[in-house]
Length: 338
Image 1: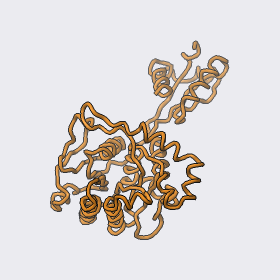
Image 2: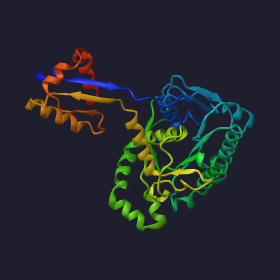
Image 3: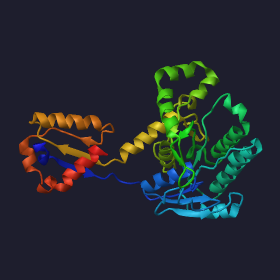
Image 4: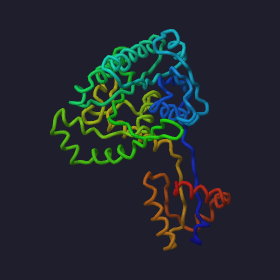
């Protein structure tokens, strides 16, 4: 509208995390690559440790400033060398296969990683585990036995400086090759919304162990944000019980903090909101057309990224002239339209 020329926006970038060195075991994989990206966005120095080193470019988008280390987790010396100087280690190592294979990878190999990190003086350890799944655990016992053994190792070596993240299904777009992607979000996102609904949560609470099958899926971005927050020592200390999606062991001496689906979502949302620049949009409030237009944009702004206080034309005239230029209008359009 005509009054849009009198709109001024002011943005301030929130402070990034203090530069810390994070090592992500399995950082070239599906969840790991998202954790790498989230850590870099928080200003951390990030290194991935995996057998293949740098991921295939056609499968994982390039990450500037990331370090790619090729090392076998069976090689204790190479593993400790890769973790040298790390403030925190995040392990995404996990696999499916025979029960013996899953116990070895999910359990024994992660235990070696956890032990090496503790021996190297790493301050914090974060382990990407899995939510309790009740009857499903009897169908693939090796997978969950390995996961729980690794969780116990985190508590043993790191106590409450360790975090165990227990998502259900982790959805997102999984790139298999340059031309093949698996859009897990098509299934995962609707399931997450449905399983979070009050009727389903109520049903889950009445079904006992069978109710664990109704754990809401988490997005890969939520899991990544939560893992980085825990590694940096923020937002991971509070919670309820794991069955309710909270923190099973928080507050117990010597036990790692366990984060279920609900706390994953809460922490990820908190990280997202804290990293959004503060934006204020000034308008005079005297134009009925502008009032309707601003109301429309406010409804679009579901993340509440823009503040829209009503101001008089006199105040607008007193604002610095540079706020009326193209940059302000472009900034206004960006925050409302993206």
